[in-house]
Image (cartoon, rainbow, N blue to C red; front, side, top):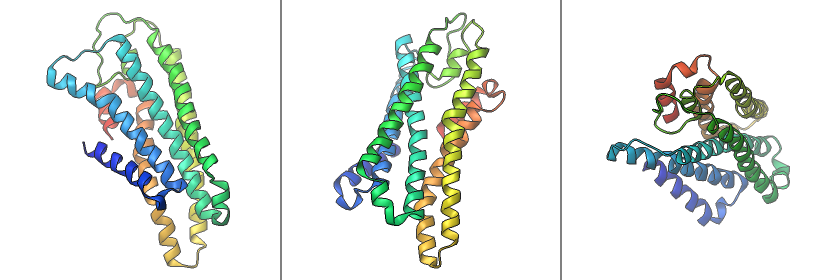
Length: 242
């Protein structure tokens, strides 16, 4: 409820205040929208199962949940990368900021984030759902997560697990590298500033974004790129709550 209220208020504040109609706040509103959608994808079904005691989900519902959680997770990853570029332009090239970060460019960033997340998720969902399930049908997770679902299949999924690692590299490590590169240039620019007030203002605008990046990419790397992560389901569930 705190997350829903906070993100909803933030979206309405940005929409209602003309002074906040800037690229940074526009991208921030999209990040809040993704968080709201992700909460709506997982939490209602989880709460219904918990309070009703009916801890089951249909195959269609499971596939739908996988698709939307992957879409939103990857879209958030890409959007955080674009937000770091926005901060890079604002601090390292402020005189051309309004030209580079135009409304058209911002819309292209948002559309690119959603499109990249949707296409990648569609491939993973279609491939994961075609595996037959034999034996136990109990998913060791609080929602339909790809790797937890694939542990129930009776086919060899080693090739798919390798593709997950490759996909994680593309959608996690490459964006993270670009974010770190952007902040390397930002910190070099900040160090060359003569005004302490200017340095503090520049760092303040970046600190919240860096916090979100750490909380997002840290658990993602531990869940999907850590050797033997499939053998620690309880830890993976805890990391998802971060």
